[in-house]
Each structure stands twice: as C-alpha cells, then as structure tokens.
Image 1 (tube, rainbow over the protein chains, first blue to last red):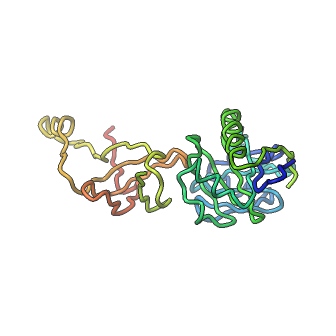
Image 2 (image 1 turned 90 degrees about the vertical axis):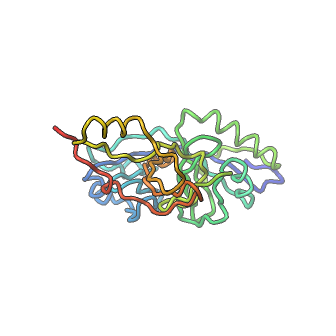
Image 3 (image 1 turned 30 degrees about the horizontal axis):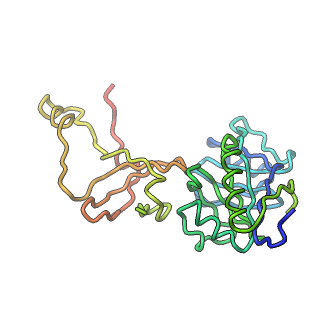
Length: 165
Length: 88
C-alpha cells in the first residue's frame, strides 16, 4: 500500500531474523551454512536473501529469511532486531532529517552503523535501492512513529507489505 | 555539528561517541611521588593527546592521537601499542 503521490515507502522485513556469531569458529560456521562471507571489517555482503555483516575480527551479524540457513554453532545468538526497508527517490532527503551521516556518499552494498534519531542502528543499501534500517526491537514504537510522521510530512504514507519487495 | 574524523570509520558526528579521556599507563614500579603525580596531576596544555573514544553504534573502541589545539586526529593507535602488564 502506497500513497497516490508516493515517492517513498516504508516496509518491515518481518521475516528477516538476526543472529550474532562470535568467536574463532564464527567464520567457519558461516561458510559451512552456505552464507556469504564479508572480508573487511564493517562491510556486508548479501546473497539469496541472506545478509551477513562483519562487525569485528571474529564477529558477524547475519540476517536470514530461510531458517534452514541458520548456522549450527554454539556461539550463534539470536538478535531481537526490527528491520525497516525504506525505498524511494527521496530516501536521502528523509534520512537527512534523522541521521547526521551524509547518505549521498552511500553506494549499494554499503554497510553503515550510525545513530538514527538517537537510536543505534545498522544500515545497508540494497542493490534494488532499498535502505535497510535495523535496530533493537524495543525502539519499534518510537521508530515507527517517527518515520510515519516524516513520511506524512513528505507526502507519503507508511505501509507494511510483509516481506514483499 | 562537530565531527570526529576517525581514521577507521571516517567522519562521524561527535554525538555518536563517548569520550573516555587520555590513555595513561600507570607507573607500575613507581615510587610514591610518581604515583601521586599519576593519580592527581593532569597536563592541560594544548597539544597531541592520546585518547580513547567509544563509538556507540558500532560498539567499538578507538584510540587516536589528537591535537587538542587544532582538533585534528593525527593517527589511529593499535590497542597493542598501549598494552601494559598488570603486576601479579
């Protein structure tokens, strides 16, 4: 569902489940599960609906929609993240109101960890132009409310299309 | 908006960081006067200071040499450079 004059829309990626893998066996566990493996710290790669980011020398965050891809590893912990997907030609304009990072320099495939309306978030720009915004689900109401207001101000309405992309 | 030009993650707003102050290595084998100087005295003179900064969104600690007069970050310091042995 989008507005008639829509040039932005916000969806929730409810099916994406987040996991933190840490420890010396994390890299092998990701590879064994068939998940993509990012090389550089603070970078991410996406493949077949799975997004994996490297957040430390032996620490990874994995977001997967297919539970069968879940790594079998003792040090794989579920995260309670909420993931928004923001898409539309005015997304940079919207993000400029909530985050101090200069999104004009962000390219598809880039991974960023920054403060958005005061909430620590991770952000990933998909190849299809959608900006994923992940944050602790405890901030869901606040974030939903804030983004809903901003979308209204920019002439759009918020929508929840499940995982439709 | 004040920015911290972190050599690792680039220019980020200062509001994303917590400042943990100067990196100081305790004088493990020092006498009382040396310890008193370490505990009670600080140099406020502008210049290059080795500081700890914590970036909340990434959860990472950064140690940098920063010129407090010009606010220029001179270099990123590996944590191994400031390691010291704790006496048993």
